[in-house]
Image 1: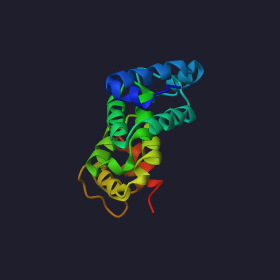
Image 2: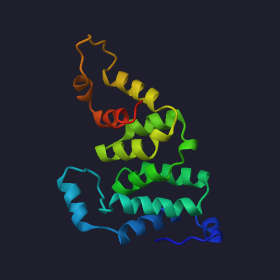
Image 3: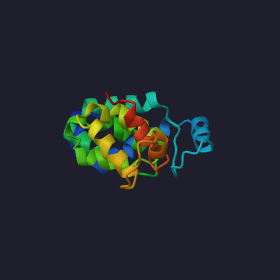
Image 4: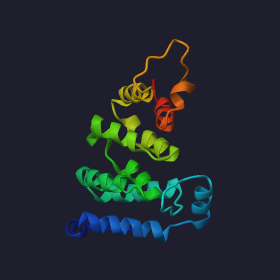
Length: 175
């Protein structure tokens, strides 16, 4: 695990910290899991094969060493890395829910690439925000492409839209 002390975190740039995080991904990579994920259809260019408990532990360690504002910057940077599976999942764990705006949360939902991302984004971050239901409604309406459906419209009709897995994940946490 990366060991940061307070003076080290002040001296390192965010790019250097991201580089160290990715080095940690490399150290804990699991080729068997990575191959299984690739065969299962995960389409990230780079898959290290870290399992969720390992990603959670990395997030926990970083959370102890950085302020909420620093974690927010790191999470945004990791989320933008659409090529690396573990970067996207770690971003969901790192982002402080109290600093996430509704617009940013909605955009993250729209940017989801896989059902795994949708589940982790919803479970680790969005369910801790006050707008889960609002975002679900907005995305559901957008999924229908503005068309008005009859009373016979089913959730399967909406679920056939391109990014339906985020809707399914959000729905699990609705009241």
